[in-house]
Image 1 (cartoon, rainbow, N blue to C red):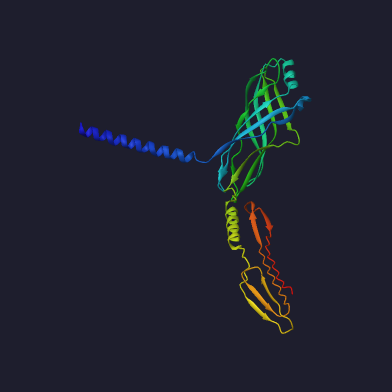
Image 2 (image 1 turned 60 degrees about the vertical axis):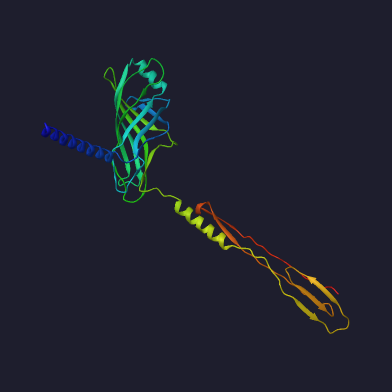
Length: 302
């Protein structure tokens, strides 16, 4: 019984170790942030050129894809999952109803481009499947095709990858077996950006902010204002006829006594300082000069 219990304990411990290793491996494989990138609502002009059909009302499309938010330089990007919500115009739906079409399904080829920090920029095609939908008795028809795009390799230098959607085609099979080859072209003047991927670390402004703070502190601490001080005492004796005695108290703590003819003494002090403050995290520089002057004038009158 004791031997059997020991074996059971060893088996249980081994199973736990294997399970823990698998859990760690799965956590590692799932690392790497990703987000659901999406376009806004885009307008397309659609028709069936092979039959000379061109619908007047635009089809409205929203495209989504799972894109990583950030990858390392040179990293591989898996083929993204791509999905869309396609809403026909009422005139297209009315024409299908007039032909007694009950359902549609099929495939779609949606073009898009990748540019920027990618090894091979250019045009791509996402192959999508259009699930079967019922043509409603009134109103528009909404389909939700889904599929995948193309795997990519990031550039070896930091930057940004940008994905933008383009035109698409669809081969829609009706319940009677007829295949409608629909062609849809983007209307001009729209933002077709699907999403972006940061390659390498995104630039930050922390270093410039730190430098700005350091510069401001250094400039402030080195700027001082001093008060002029006069502590001298002077005595002058004249040799001309007449005696005059005057006392003049000027700026500061000094005094002067004059004996004889009137004597005029001028004392002027001028001091300035300038201070430049750097603001807005190093993006703009605002220069200011702060001047401080002191003017003292002493005059003795006879």
